[in-house]
Image 1: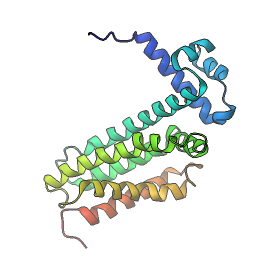
Image 2: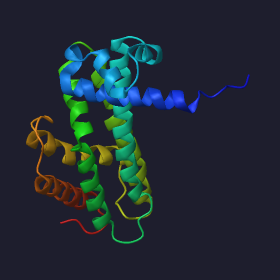
Image 3: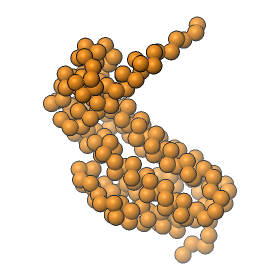
Length: 212
C-alpha cells in the first residue's frame, strides 16, 4: 500500500500551531493558557487547532515534544563538529562546549525546562519525555563522536557513553546552579567560563597526551 504524504500546507499549519502553543504555554503556564489565544497567535480559527491536535492536553504534550525535538536537533548538530577533527582537539572541543551552552541558555531551552518543572505534577511523564528527547539524544550523539575521537587517537581509550555523560555534567551542573534551575539568564561571560572550564577538565581526564 502506497502512503500518501500529508499536504505541505497542513504540515506547516500544524507546526505553526505547535510553535505558538509552546510560546503561550511558556508565557502563561498550562492552566492559564487558552486555546483561543493560541489560535489567535497562530492566526488560525479555534476549531482548526482542535482539528489538528485535539484537546488542550494533547496540544500541550505535542507542543512540548516539538520544542524538545527542536532543542535536540540544535545540540546534536553542534556535536557534528567532533565527527572529524584533523588538528588540535582543544579549540574544537572548547567551541563545541560554548555552542552547547548557547543552545542550553536560549529562551526556548529555558522555557522548556521551566515548563517541565512547573507541570511535572500534572503531567508526570513529561520529565521523562523531555529528557529522552533532549539530554539522552545528545548524550548518545556525543558518545558516538567521542568514540570516533578515541579510535583516531585524539582521546585516550575510554567508555564513550560515560565520557559523554561526564562532559555534559561538567557543562550542565554549574549552569543549573548559576541559572537557579533555569529561572534566570546567565551572563555570556559566565557561560563562556563554564564552557572553558568543562573543556579543560575533560581534556585533562581524557586527552591522549600525558596527564598532569
